[in-house]
Every structure is written in structure tokens, then in C-alpha cells.
Image (tube, rainbow, N blue to C red; front, side, top):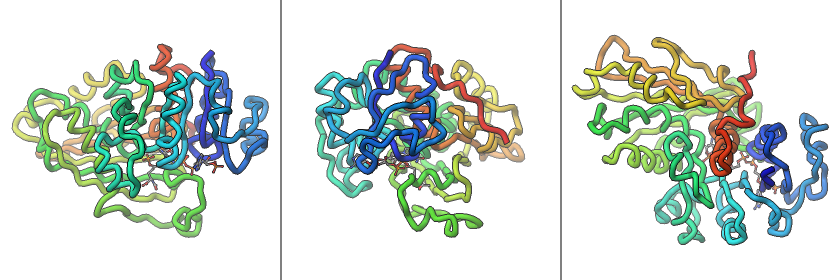
Length: 347
Ligand SMILES: NC(=O)C1=CN([C@@H]2O[C@H](COP(=O)(O)OP(=O)(O)OC[C@H]3O[C@@H](n4cnc5c(N)ncnc54)[C@H](OP(=O)(O)O)[C@@H]3O)[C@@H](O)[C@H]2O)C=CC1
Ligand SMILES: CC(=O)N[C@@H](CCC(=O)OP(=O)(O)O)C(=O)O
């Protein structure tokens, strides 16, 4: 059994990890931390886990975590950076759901996250974790900086187009128009997440620059090996879970000459969690809710040279905790879908 610890067990991604790991056949939940709820039974806070999770919250210290084989950080940015080094030194694998180990460039990190990177040497050992794109490099990693939620949706949507030897699109002019449910903002109290603020409303944010832009461009550059430029506009939608990424690309002559539907189907043919839907499909966030699937549809309206790629994921599952469990399975040589076979909740 893999002994697992979660730092940040009271937040949305931490509790989603609990929901998934409680039924994982190879996992023993060893430690779950919360500074605010020390000694409280986890099932008192999350009655949905009663009879399945029988441990109590502890302090996020090495003492609580040192018996683990792997520790997930489901914490705000800056927390994993401060604690990962000593865990890695103790031979414990670390999967950070936050952004501390995603950007390779520490200046970029400081610019977008408003804090200096305190572990530049450790960052060099870290591996970016978007399983379908970086699987081979992740297998032997001690430390994984898991892809963010919007970056997961956008990179999965563009990967078949950007991993060809010859460019198929104008790689300097990609537009990703993304919409997220409110759980993307986390469980902490903020005015923007209040029911009366977020419900019956729909707005863009971060238009002039969002911290996921450098992460997405870094990933897309690694895929294509060529310079890539993206306009990324996130929106807040009055729903709890889900991301819909609507991605616009300009096809070049080579791109216009190929069957995009066939390209996507072949590219993702062996990927358990990626569903390329039939031509003309309109994927809905509801069709992935609570599951680790990404559903993708490719359109070429009027046969013109702009292709529109639609991607839906559950931000808390494929965009965070599900992908984290998929990464753990990879690290411990288990089938990637173990413990992740939940179907979406319907309706
Ligand atoms: N929500 C989402 O859709 C996604 C979130 N992420 C990332 O995952 C991480 C967690 O997000 P989310 O679950 O939404 O956040 P929440 O705000 O819901 O939860 C944060 C958790 O971290 C704990 N925590 C806060 N500060 C510290 C600290 N200094 N030391 C130890 N524990 C701390 C909190 O518990 P306590 O204060 O009691 O210790 C709480 O359990 C973030 O980095 C986020 O960017 C990634 C992808 C998607
Ligand atoms: C709706 C909302 O606020 N979404 C968050 C992104 C979700 C998240 O927590 O970001 P990571 O994937 O980087 O961890 C935001 O825009 O900052």
C-alpha cells in the first residue's frame, strides 16, 4: 500500500483528493493536515466521507508527514516551496497542486506570483506534470509541479496541433477563451466567490495578464519546439465545477490540407482519460463533472481557415486532484486509471 499525506486537507482540492483516495485500492491515508482543524476528525468536517475516512487532521509538520511515501500539497502558492525540500530529502515524493514548481524561470515566477522563488535548486529537479504531455519525464521524478486547471484544458486542446514536425497553425496567434466555475477560486472566503456576487452574473477577469499565461506558453513551446504566443482570457461562470476552453487557431496551408478530426482521434487514441467526441459535438461541463475525463471537440466553421477546439474538464478533478492521483499512479507504477474510474455525475 502507498502511504499518502495531504497538506491542505480542508480546501477544495484537498477534500477532492480525499474523496478519490478513500476508494483507491492501493492507498493508505496516513496524514491529512489543517492548521485550523488540528485533532478534528476529517469526517466531522466532511460528512460525505463518514465510514470511509477515519483519521484526524494534524499540523503540517515533517513529524506528521515523515511516514508517507508521497505527499500532496493542496495549498496556496508558496507553501510547498517552503516544505518540499525536507520531504524530498527524506525520500518522500511530492506532488504540488499549486504553482510553486510549474514555471522553470524564477524571474517569471516572481513576476506572476508576487514572491521570490525560495528554492531555485529544487525547482531544477522538479518535473512539470501534465500527464498526457510529460508522462515519460514524470515517471522517475521526486517532485512534480502539477499543471494548473486552465493550463490543463488549453494544452490538451492544442497538443495534437502543436506536436507535429511542421506547423499546422499560426502558432503566434492562438486565442483561448476559457470559463471556470467558482470552485476554481478555492474555499477561502472572498467577496468575488459569494453567492450574491457570482450567481446570475458572468464576467471576464485577468484580461491584461493572468498567471496561467506563462505556464500555458511554456507548455506549448515545449510541445512545438517553436515560439508560441497566446491570448488567454479567463471568465468566471456561476456554476460550482467545470472549465470550458474555447480555443481559436488560424490554420495554415498545411493545416487546411489535413483532416483535423482524424488527427485528434489518432493522437488521443490510447489516452484513457481523453475523449475526442464525434464531429460536430458540443461538449458540456456536465459531461465530465466529478470525473477525470477531458472531452474535446474540433470544429472548422464554414470550412474556413479558423478551427475552433472545445475542451471541457472538471477543474477539481482533471484540473487538479484527479490529475494528481493519475500522477501518483504513474510514479508508483500502477495503472493510471486506478481509483479514477468514476463516471461523471448526471444530471
Ligand atoms: N480550486 C481549483 O480548481 C484548483 C486549485 N489548484 C491549486 O491547488 C491549491 C489549493 O487550492 P484550493 O484547494 O482551491 O485552495 P483552498 O483555499 O480551498 O484550500 C487551501 C488549503 O491549504 C491549507 N493552507 C493554507 N495555508 C497554509 C499554510 N501556510 N500551510 C499549510 N497549509 C495551508 C488550508 O488549510 P488550513 O488553513 O487549515 O491549514 C486549506 O486546507 C492552490 O495552489 C490552487 O491554486 C489547482 C488546480 C485547480
Ligand atoms: C475561478 C478562479 O479563480 N480560478 C483560478 C484558477 C484556479 C487555480 O486555483 O489555479 P491553479 O490551477 O493555478 O492552481 C484563478 O483564476 O486564479
